[in-house]
Image 1 (tube, helix red, strand yellow):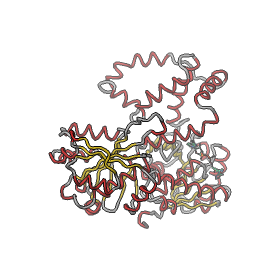
Image 2: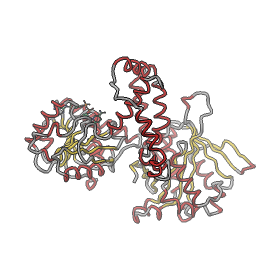
Image 3: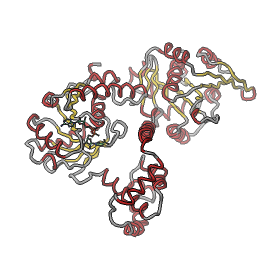
Image 4: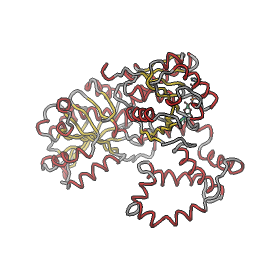
Length: 511
Ligand SMILES: NC(=O)c1ccc[n+]([C@@H]2O[C@H](COP(=O)([O-])OP(=O)(O)OC[C@H]3O[C@@H](n4cnc5c(N)ncnc54)[C@H](O)[C@@H]3O)[C@@H](O)[C@H]2O)c1
């Protein structure tokens, strides 16, 4: 444990929403984090909330970084003394309220306390760094590291230098951001709104004009984004989108530049977001989400971010003798070799696929929301060789069955569990037993399933015995397909049994 912790210190100034998120991100890779706020009570409250948040995120399997929640929290301390917070810190992330007078006063104080080796980064969303650093002795160390809310789930960080920021500080800040798992972009110079808000405002302005001109309702504007553009932009930028939408970018320009220019000329002046149109937009939005329902809708939005993190793409589950990892393209070749075996085709009721089809399958499994797949590694072999392909022994899946009940709250009720130990040498070592237990527990705790089914070939004695010993009951025999179905209701005492059989296991980010 000690080796995963770092000696270097990071100071977080201001312990609101953003400060606490930064604290967790730095602690995630073992930095010694000191949170500073103006009043002792606020510091204590922030520490308590950070601990709760880390524990919750760990339970949901979404903990970032390489340490457990308890290890991460052990890296975080609090103080109401600015000098104590800053002394010895390699990096300071300022997260005080978005008021220039507060920021300026703070940076004047910090200037008197800081040495030459500390990066001073502000979380500000709107102030260019020159606005609060101009008169500072240590102004060459100041820059903006602007996160996007919620930073724990949205990785972008805009690094913005002031005219006097030394490039080595900007470069080091970028390195640190990458190390804690964020995605930094570095602007070559400061500009109002940085990049994210300039692009965001361009979209806001055009949507505003479309509503003001009576072209679309507020609700339909949002559909254009959430069901259209947003789906692309979740994984591609606008420029690469254009590149792919023609035979390369030059071809795109050739084909569309006149149209784009002509349409853009009709866009009209920058609107002011006030007056009658503001009232109309607010009215339509409140019909969609009444003000008293905002907390509920925010919780829904945060849950969507979690889904976007695509749970099983980002985690590994470490048991005693196996490790479950996401199915990546690097595994496909070995998987493909396995599936040439007629015995495995028979046991898993699958057809042989070409290598291209296997890649397509891997990709579709990754994106299919109703399927959760992990590959199984022999833990001992992996720890000796550090070679996933060498250690790969099989796979396990849960297919989430569509809800056939009338009650929509019963969504995601039934999971069909599958297990395959493909490597002959790995059979008989209880890898399948442990991997199945881990997967069953994962389905209960993270996919919120209420019932399991398992279907095996009536010749697969090993699987049939295993599900019986896992307290599944036979529910159906389909003679024509030589299949036997098993069922298992998910009840408290069975969950307790699963946990006692498993002993300890850990969920960690992958890789
Ligand atoms: N909330 C967002 O969506 C978001 C997104 C990106 C960037 N930011 C930026 O992050 C910064 C912090 O935002 P937030 O939403 O966490 O604010 P917040 O109001 O939730 O928290 C601010 C914290 O700073 C403390 N504070 C006030 N004066 C202080 C001082 N002089 N010294 C130390 N602490 C002080 C407050 O007690 C409070 O705990 C702002 O600059 C904001 O623009 C916010």
